[in-house]
Amino acid sequence: MKRLVLTGLLLSAAAPQCRAYEYEFFNAGKGKVLTADPGQPLIRSLFTHGTGGYFSGQDFWDIGLGGDLPLLTARRGADEAAGLNVRGDFRSRFSVGSNSFNLLNADYTGGLDLTIRKAFNLPGDLAAGLSHTSSHLGDEVLTDTAAYTYSRINYSREVLRVLYHPPLSGAFAQAWGAHYILRKDPGTPRGRLALQYNIAVPLGARFSANSDLQFNEEHAWTADFTLQLAVKLGGEAGQVFTQKLALEYYDGYSRQGQFHDRRERHVSIGIIAHI
Image 1 (cartoon, one colour):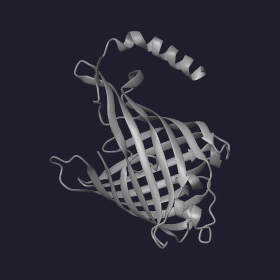
Image 2 (cartoon, one colour):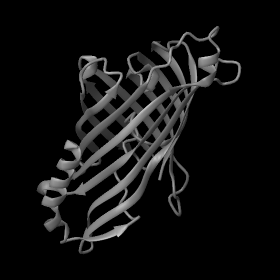
Image 3 (tube, helix red, strand yellow):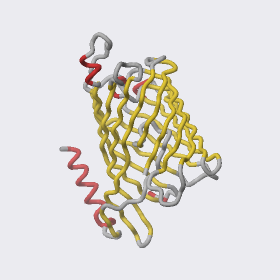
Image 4 (cartoon, one colour):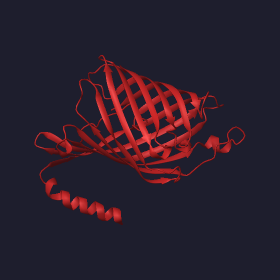
């Protein structure tokens, strides 16, 4: 009830300002894509080898299908002032060393992502997203108790994320901000706030180095670190998807919901793509 009242007050306050814009449904500018961010919805097919932590020595095939679909854009004259996208992400991890590529974990995320151009007279863009994620243990893992000792947990989270994207600093693209968990199950470990910094550095026309750093209160502010080297594939003309061959290193708490409290270190190589 409190959420509905707060939403109503915000909409009422914004209504006079909103009339100054023109609106168009199912059309919104592309938001910033942070390919090194473990939470970024992407199309991905990666071979992953655990080099330390909970999954040390194990091999996986990580598959993802995610991205943004335009819902609404607001324009003032010829300039886009804000864009609202529907965000979805499906991820699965298969065990390469099993008899039939057993499904280990599957995560589902849905939400909304709002990008405001030059919000509050800032020179850059402000992105705010609200998402819900649920996680499931694979059926093969649940039934083959002789080979697996994992126990299924009821995992779900609702997260509010706010990131600021300043103008390019030279050729570097940066973003920083915070995440706040509005609701989570299980409720442990305690803590809801996370801080994030992301940077993308072009290395010529096709190559790039990308990195993401996050500090989570629920893990005593221990850093989750991603380093990614990527090369763009294909030509530019008429291309709908941006495809990259990526080599990625990750050291942090697992992004697989069923294993969220386990720390892992891995190296991945494969294809990532986004619209």
